[in-house]
Length: 338
Ligand SMILES: [Zn+2]
Image (cartoon, rainbow, N blue to C red; front, side, top):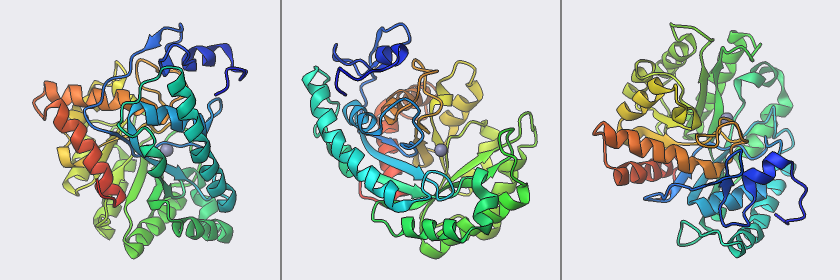
């Protein structure tokens, strides 16, 4: 956070806080954060995938933006091959975030929460193997060992992200993906833990096969009693319907704010209030008006604001009701008291 930090020009513009603003657009103009009507929850924000940002500073900015609860997904076949390193790095980021919060406040940033350090006691882990790592997971004893080691950590609240990814970036055989999906879903049942699912259809697949196969498996094995979250929901209301009928939560993030995402916004306005969640999937898909920048958990502020707006417009709930539901639902999914 030191002003001596050498940041690239665009990043300097995006993050300089000397004027008391947490974020700036690509032209360096300060961006006002929406005032949340309740503390904010980012149910799915990676801290280990940043290319430019620093996790401790990201935690500090999230704290000041009003985020009071964060779920960090980690993957025993990806960023969590070495659980001990990961857990001690996380402790250090949280520790350093205290100092970063103080520094940002000294620059005039006003905290949205009464206790600006609240988030630092509420950083939780989701542990699971993404469909990208399914084939390796199916054969790897070390990955299974790391998964169980992380599941026993006191920060861990559930299993995720796992699921099916038939998109263009995943070359893993669908059968291998299904095997890893099934195994992790069964484990959630066995341990009575909630799950966060990553489900992505192939481009242009009108059948939504990944979603169809995922719903079928949930029907066969049952939805974990502790909860099931369709993370980073980017499909329409029709694809969402069977999951809502099964009682799954649906998490909306940056993609819902993009101008062409009318179908996602329609799903967000029709999702029952007790199943609605907010997330960032940071560092991916920063919401408008910061689209294109590296996303951080603080930016859940914009996605929550969008959800509150579209739901008020269509009569699904007042702004206050939406903010309160987002906070309460995240706690229920995480197995925590709100
Ligand atoms: Zn993710």
